[in-house]
Length: 620
Image 1 (cartoon, helix red, strand yellow):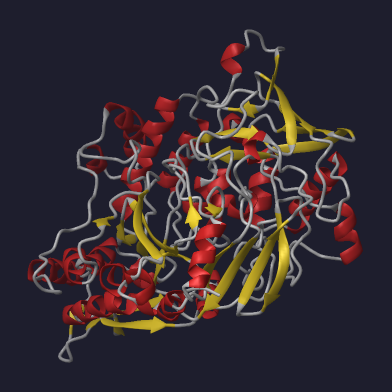
Image 2: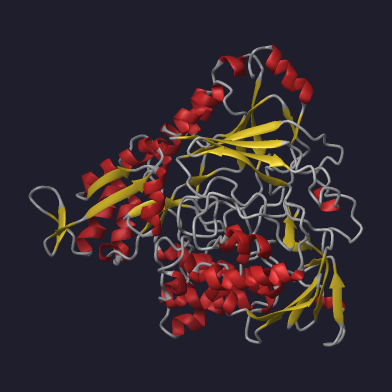
């Protein structure tokens, strides 16, 4: 199952896009290939039989069921209106796709080949004539041109700005051939990749239904993918069904994939309710995100009798960058000393020992688990980038000599670390937030308040000790736990002090960084939740986007990582390098690639094991 890139725009727009241009000797040489790689060679040749990490003999059949939190009222993930249901874009396929063992390369999916000059001024996609929508109608180049047009008309403002600055025009050259022309000043590394992330939409379907990209809808946009919506009950469940007539089922990139007949999503108010339902067999696959449940909760009959598998599977991906983020749009967080003081009051070491059973590592970098993580003092490559910015006054000179900022280390024997409390107190005193007779800190008559926006009850035991530590500091702190729909609405409107956020970075970052950190997106991006607007960060993003060698790109990313961490707009939380999963013993999988768990992609159903579970009364 291919998950469409456009639904993950920040991540997809930042995915690195490699070139075969090294094989071309002259500007007018046209390169024609089944894939694209800017910095190196493709892992898969044109005649590959199947992906290296799948079981090409995997049987088709059965159902896998997972859970989702809260509610849903729409199937349109491309708009901020409504709350889209889980896997709303499961039926959408993109022109180009990525593979879990070659994450920085792009391969043709809806196209047979792509053609481009060494200059990367344009790209032609030769589309597969056999592509069909779920209603059996053919997909043509005119549909792709229509898709581009509606995204530029009805897409999110940040999307229109990003693509409008890259793509000059789109030309239909034939029924199954289309050309994207790029603007001369657009970043070369991003050009083909951005053109290749458009999904297959039907112009006829949109015109008949009157659907709009910027409105919520209870009917998914018709797509070409292996799965389509089967049925749903609002706020209870969604069921997707594999299409028997899927046009691409025999393609090499799909062999051994899309193996389940049905994918079911069950909705629950919170993880605790969902866990009880899992133990009862209401759904069959669970990724466990609660360390407490993982360490203490897996003691129930189905597990003890061997009917449920509880296991840790390796995860070689980038760290998630999970953290509390400050809303920098609020004046009280302007002073970095205030943010530093508040950050010091989160005792990760005590939390990990007492709450997380030692299962986690501390988040340290936006590129944890990679060689793009800044470490120690700046390298020569970083200094070459940072020094001119210091000379211009965009950065403090200390960035050239200081070691990369790491989270403070507290004692693990009690929630409140007194050394951290003294340090935080001194910082707030310096910032003018003075403790009054009532124990609260004020500045210009205003009490220093901090509110944590959170929808998950499992975070109560993490945030409440943090709140108590802040109260000891003289901060009026509280946890505001809301339902998921309220959380979505409030984060969209930037109505919070601190909230939990994840920074899903790419292995070859580029223009997608603007969605996360640029001044351009401070008011219209769900990724730049903190509202970061900093000229030094903007300059660093431009340097990374313009990088023409892998070494230059990595130097730029390390410099950016170093600067972002020094801004202290986050309070790093935790991560782990394994997938903690549990499932009823009716699923099987090949050896996992480093960058994918893939339970909905290349796992499969074992009918005999399922029948045994039914016979034992474990499942129905």
